[in-house]
Image 1 (cartoon, rainbow, N blue to C red):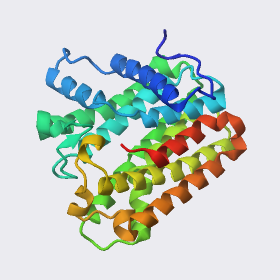
Image 2: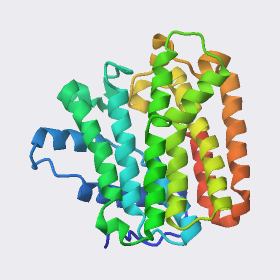
Image 3: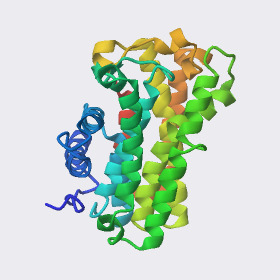
Image 4: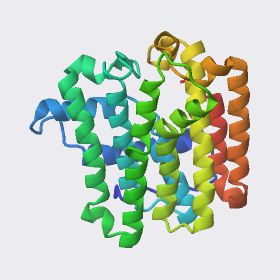
Length: 309
């Protein structure tokens, strides 16, 4: 089966668990194909890249791209390279986020973080290699020959902006800047919308762009992605406060120890939960014009509000 094609998946999947499991499989197959094997030189670098990529992630961002592509284009034919590239960007961000100079975490997905296993230098280079691989995939002839070049360029720009100094990286800078400082709601919003929300929003809009979405459709996916991304991060912050290390696969209560600017730290857990509910309600309202075609996104919205890891 072509990794470019994947398989036809109906929008009304029998269950979200099945939908996510099936598409995780397709994304993992694509990643295994695109990422050099650990036997390729430099072996240590490629081993480190694969270690973090295949550590057991949910593949949420690729699945959001697949879902938006299906809604606009009726199938997932051709979207897997984009899905794989998004996971490369996300994994790069996690590797760098865990570094001692950033959040200084030693556990991710129940395993030692990249710098704990391979050292800081290799971890930095593995992250660098993953984000550059993402754009190698998106500019590959295998991918670009399947879609109009204008669409491909728009997707590349979309992902690049979400990953760069006005997106994900900006959020990381503000996240570090406000450690131990007095923050207000505007500051927390700025952190969340960039550090987490930018790539989640881009996963949806880039998938839709690739399928040929029009401007009203792109606006819908953008609003939905913004609300979903904020809810996802606030839920993550709550889990850090109230969850347990074994279930989450990472250390808990580190945000409080580091003085992070989060919704729970600013407003308390109860108001944070109310904020999540409001954001998810707004997200669900945003996709109403898409009708039943967006039922997979509705299920994903419910999942984000209830997830425990």
